[in-house]
Length: 208
Image: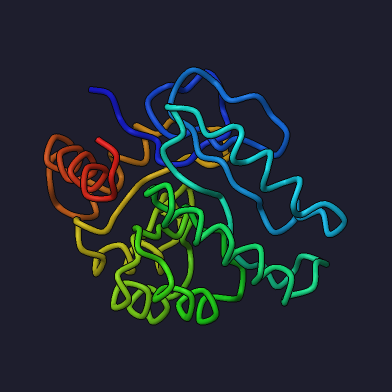
């Protein structure tokens, strides 16, 4: 069985969404493109958006990763402006958003009403109350390696509906199949059923 890796940084994985880093050349399979908070060039934001738009070939299926990060030295107001521009671009090209968020979840939630497309929090590993608030605001949650060992996160996964879940390796070195097996076990369902839900979720966000 092939397992979809929702967010990864490995060019040898074709079954998933490859995260295109700034100024990279797109691969010939599905990828996302965005301006990560840490990559914002305050002297050439316009040029970065021009690069983004010029690289949106047919295999570009999502905008991101983009979002807000309280640890990045870029001014928060600038981060929010760049995030909003990417939300507007997502609305224009009708592609979902892959969100990077560090200690800015309620700020990210406040941007939800500006987005017409699906918003997916990648690498979600926070407490259940944050998950609940995100789900209440129609976010999807993409879980990564932390689910394999973090008991609190496993409990959060239990309360996350199957129609709101994605799974990813991000930049970690492990097999996505291992994560699918663990999540199927936590959810008490077969791998086939889990896989069906993930593929259905992909269709629902506009990729399938």
